[in-house]
Length: 190
Ligand SMILES: [Ca+2]
Ligand SMILES: [Ca+2]
Ligand SMILES: [Ca+2]
Image (cartoon, rainbow, N blue to C red; front, top):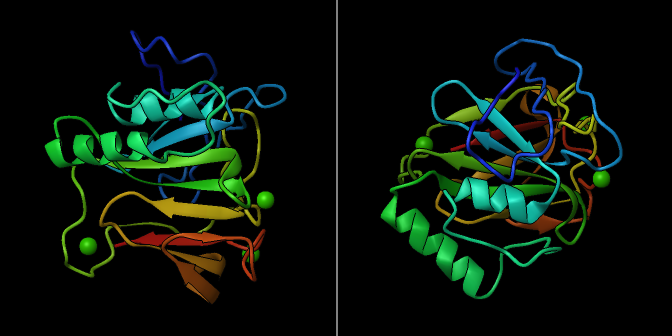
């Protein structure tokens, strides 16, 4: 999937991302070091991925420019979290439902998930990654068996599974390190 976002100034990296658990297309990502290591996955309609060099760039995109984190920030907290939740409540831009990170303690490469609206109270599954193997960000980083922490911003509940196709041990909501550090291979959002 090759996503081009004209007019988004924070986009500085390629957005060549594989989504084998969903769209089925396979495309090797290219890039160097951490360039493009902070992606936004929009679950609205066909999954759309946009990658950035910094977490602040990804969050600016995920919130339609409403949350501008300090350079070097690795998480949304304090007044920025308040801003994000206000932006979610307004729902005039994408709703940021959570972020997953490569490292524990909300550090490292990141995936921030957006939708056109927050989840309701219905526990049905809205979207899944059935197999993270081969899911890469624009730096070429493969996310299978790498997630080290995750946080939710809204009502969407994410469940992370040890194995592909929602098998093995699981953890949900906000977490960091522990038994599933570097083990997650599939995810379901409800
Ligand atoms: Ca990791
Ligand atoms: Ca695994
Ligand atoms: Ca649901």
